[in-house]
Image 1 (cartoon, rainbow, N blue to C red):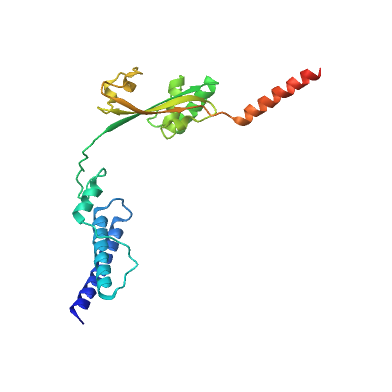
Image 2 (spheres, rainbow, N blue to C red):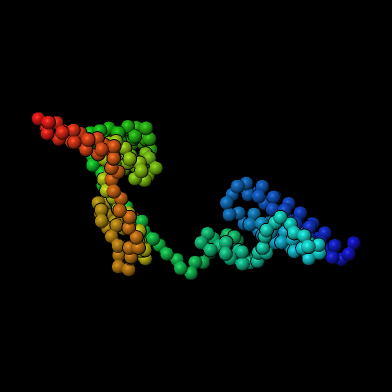
Length: 232
């Protein structure tokens, strides 16, 4: 066996060893995302495979089915750490940190206040939470109760007891994150007011869903009425 062949055999053994190490790291992580050891084992396996592939090509003009490029471990750690924390568990440094604020407003028509209150009371009984068994007395209390019983988003209010009207979503760059404790409970504007230095970067207007079938039926009914009047 030539020295070149021995080098090729050693490279193959490194691939096998790296593959075993990678499998062991994957098993240990048990599905955990962004695991440090899995990432390091992946880099080792990638680089071992790349080295073996290049040696095989140089010696015999053959290639493996592994289409990989060499990875600089230090550069890989740095790139992986941007925005999600470094692979060594330290917080990654972002040269451009930013805070954005997403503000949403959607209006609703309440066809029956009594029906809305009954629904909120049923939700409170089904999800007692802190043990509050008192009656739901206001529309605002009913809406918050229904949101807490749901997923906490406005989607929890997509119910027959509320008719969704138009809304708006505003995305803004802000200098200081929100601190709810700095505002009084009855302050309905302060938490949503942009401060000096904040900037609106985008806006989405939401329009209430229009039932085209109902509109078509109304138009056909109106046309039928007009035709009947003309025949008279």
